[in-house]
Image 1 (tube, rainbow, N blue to C red):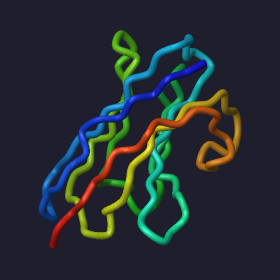
Image 2: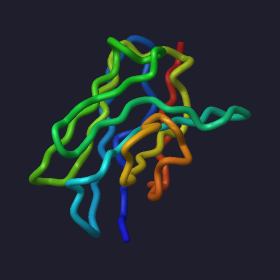
Image 3: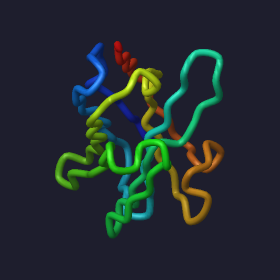
Image 4: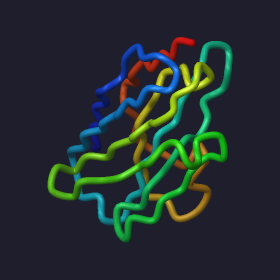
Length: 124
């Protein structure tokens, strides 16, 4: 079993930065990928970014490429999402997810474990 705990959400003004953290526990992650998804009110959950634990390859949605950076800390078994130049349309509940994924890393269905979510609100 895997446990994921997100933190770092909040209310910020447009253009400000914010960093989300996802602390993982429960098993080894050498074969796993970890991702961030978000869900705005009335919309489907969408892919934001992902990272392969082994090797550190990263993936981003086009909407956040160049503004968001995903990274990991092996010792702390924690994944971060650094969000810069935030926009009001980035407002959503952000979820951390993990899974033994080879393909379709941007698909919600590929992930087996999810955190509880953290709210990010960007005011204009």
